[in-house]
Length: 64
Image 1 (tube, rainbow, N blue to C red):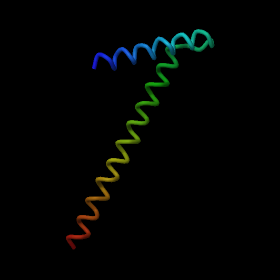
Image 2: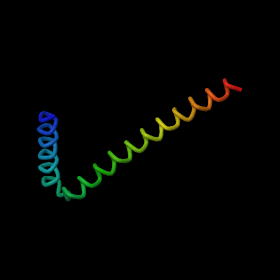
Image 3: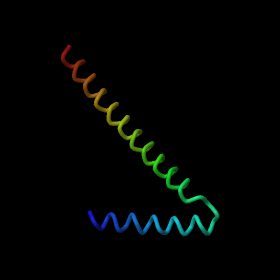
Image 4: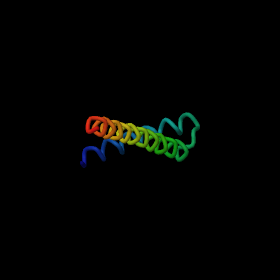
């Protein structure tokens, strides 16, 4: 777990350097990255829920 934190911190530092060089607001970039991660997670959760719903529907059809 500690190794993951180190990697994440090194990516954060690299991103901060690139943002400064490019004249981009680092805090805005962090917010955008967090929102993108949440969007991907929500999409994955929706896909899993759809799979569960489909399996339940198939099971109920087989019961009839």
